[in-house]
Image (tube, rainbow, N blue to C red; front, side):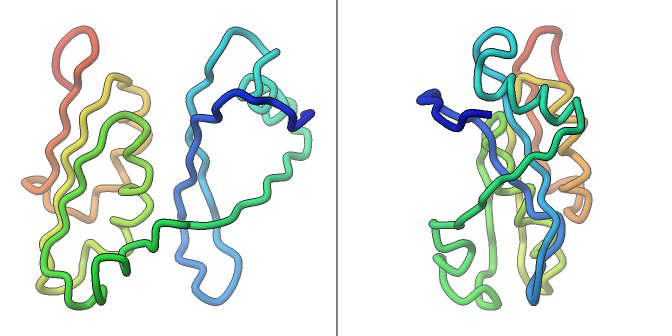
Length: 143
């Protein structure tokens, strides 16, 4: 990969392990833009499919995380309102905070891709079903 693309890179990472004292596992979710393997995301996916080494340098997060809203143990309610692949920050955070006693956590997610929904829905399994509001807006009706 040449790393010189000026295209946007519509991807984000989900932290699969808290990694408080060391490395953690990340899952990357992205939407391929453009046509064919000549675009950055196409080249990246082709490289992964061919099992070539893929090196990524990850920095951040830069938004302050959940601590930006106050002391995490004092937050009584969290509501994530997300759309499409923008759900990944919620998918990354919720498994680590959902079972905090005394805190209500909700997610409202609007999406067009059934495959994205199927892939990411397990990240919300720690929440009670009544706290999850998933809205399919693609062709053919509800999820």
